[in-house]
Length: 476
Image (cartoon, rainbow, N blue to C red; front, side, top):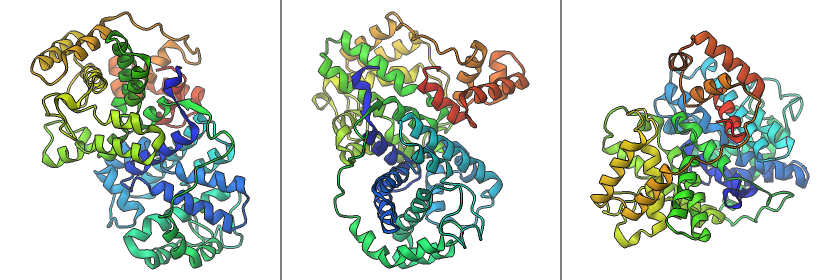
């Protein structure tokens, strides 16, 4: 892993916080605000500095696993983004599909993935443990006699309560939010904790507009792979698995062939790994539409690069790369989005990044079309360059890089057998057991047996969790 493919732990957490917020249809600073409230609540309850820091981290990563459950909630609600926003703000009218039996597995999956993210980032065990308990079931009476229920980390209750206050206040007013919170006192969080929050709620919400101090905890500046962010984003749409990694690899090779210096090449790679941030704000039903998108669909799709650019304004450490990434859908003739930039407004970095992403997309299967072969994709790219949509030099560099010798594969992790790896590649792309069986010419029962073995070896309980771990280990 090269140094330009890393990010600090704190910056990764901040990016993943925003990804989670957008995936849930919440304001992009919701988790940041919740983190400040939760840490203040922990301090008010007498917790020490380390516990308050851990509480903050749990709040920031609260929704980080939500990309993994987007498909499930899309199935239940139709619109996974607006639907989940209505759920958490308690503005969703009666919905027959929302039963404990079908929502609880999704909540457990979200907890599992969030906990795995904490492990991949090397966060403390108490942060991981809290994330794995964050959306557990609630039973009336289990918190009436003591402040905290046994075996559930304290940070869980701080974050549940702070998150509800932050998200309910804009929808219902602060007093309305406290009333709704009071209805769940002793069920979702300890009644005593609600009593400690209530006198401060108005003041604390008002203080959220004040600038926050920079995080400074042990290990905050330790560097981790930036690909973790890309992998978490792409859990939302399994057919995207590994897409940003492939764009980054092709952009790096193309930049070298185009004569770019290392200082120009590095931002390209980082932008490729970050460019999908805005995709999580668009409902799955739009991305998987089999026919042409209508005007409303396109309005949402055109906001994808806007939200990616917004991430850069919210997280200064990635501002340059996020800005570059937000040009990935612009075209030389002005037919792209969201700025409709054209001609000289696009530098060579922007032109090369757009061409690399387009070529990789053409060579990848999508719900509305099969993958193009490299020859067909090259013909299409060349034609679009001739028509003035792409830069000729950028397209030539991308096609030359694609035709070049394949990179030497890394030493293979022997955890999984060849057959298990093949099964994993199929299920990581969202294929059902039956679809994978048909492609591999084996029985669905055999696929399920291999999936069970894969889950056991990867210590995973769901396909998204297994996919995330497999990507991190370089298995797929």
